[in-house]
Length: 298
Image 1: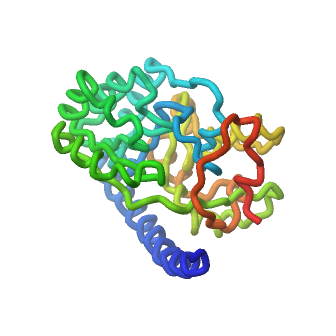
Image 2: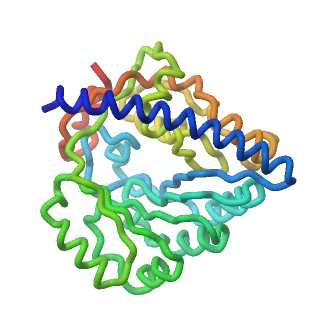
Image 3: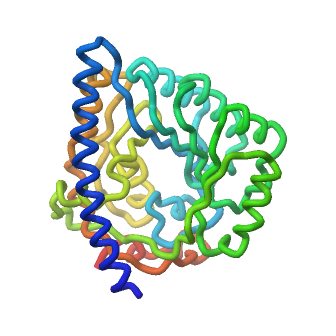
């Protein structure tokens, strides 16, 4: 089964490589025209952790949420400052993904949604959840999701596969726009502690390489420069990626220069190797029992 999956993913990877190259050409052309017209650039995608911790504990979680053993939530005031700054740098953001961790664990989610919509009225806003806490989408949160035209997107992991109909019925009854993924039965292991991978090759196969990530006044082309701290702390590593973050409040230039930097592979991409696909599993209870091997490709 895994060999068949690898062959299929290999073909898909080639399509993705071509798509990303075309996307780069389109983005650069669009930026050139907008600059000539005296307009600000468009950022096509932004991800933001509404919560660092999670309630599912996926083994080998790409965002390392299974290594966060206590509640860790962002500052709503910091988010407001950051998202307002992005509105000065960019004319619009195509898709804003509010995620985690598990975003429904944040009691301030309603405010975060409101601030996001007020700041970027034309953006598509997606709330990414594992669906376990879907019944919390009621009251003020439900009204905010509907009034702000937020699409709830469920990543359908194994524990929720048999509850797909329940999820669909709930969202329909609540009048919520929703999308539910196909069952997620495989996870990718990609970390290379030797740091000797080719950054360009790593980017060409990385599903997160265009997931511009925001946290505490900085953005980067993927979540790793922010989330690797969980991995370092838990396993006593010192993978340094902070230098890849771009200070949106500093002297890193305008939106065009920031986008140009985001298009380049990070030097830290050398820590990501060829993805090794393994069956999805729920992690063991307690972060002290999680193995470093769950994240490292063989």
